[in-house]
Image (cartoon, rainbow, N blue to C red; front, top):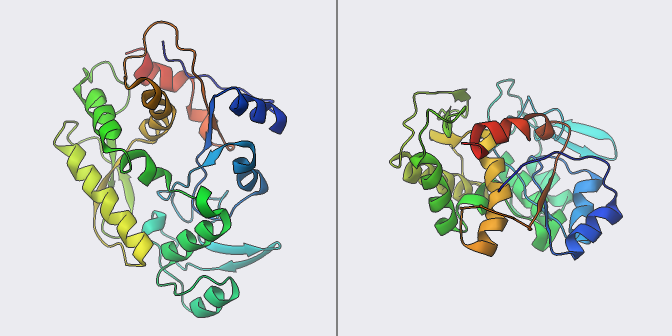
Length: 266
């Protein structure tokens, strides 16, 4: 039986022991500036996975619209509209070439490109995009995972799987009229692929798309390692494997009870 719980009080030594026992440890910080705990995660066997679909001016924890070095802040984005990060653009007066040269990043074309290249330089081989890794690197899992959720009786669910519509300007709105069926899945995959191709190449993202409910993305982060071990999404009987997803001060607020009621008890 799959069960989602929240827990506090883990030390770094606890987490290292957890990984040494064969368990999975991950973290999904938003795109933006990095804290020490996020940078330390690979040293104890964990995997940080960057989420790029955070909203720029509303993200008061990771600040994707700012360059922060030694406590000094430089504003990189003029927009006050809460667009998602792949759509953000440099503000007027930002000396992109100077920033690129200062941090030895090579040519930088867009603000998401700068964030991507900066995080990749900081984290090296440990860097990956959560949105990309979860649903594009293993299409067998992602297709099976989403098809399984879509095929369920939606009268039993408390959330819509696909519930976020993103305009060509990058404004995210909740839209419960998005079709909740298999036809939406390839549209979602195609949108994700186009977004990350653009981010990595420094191209402007200016097309609309469909996004998952936040809870579905985090559920996938929990389920995928279990699927990779069992090749099954039917978690019945005793499940001895554990997955620990580290949370910042926000994610834990909508985990546990809400997840179990929305999906796992259905």
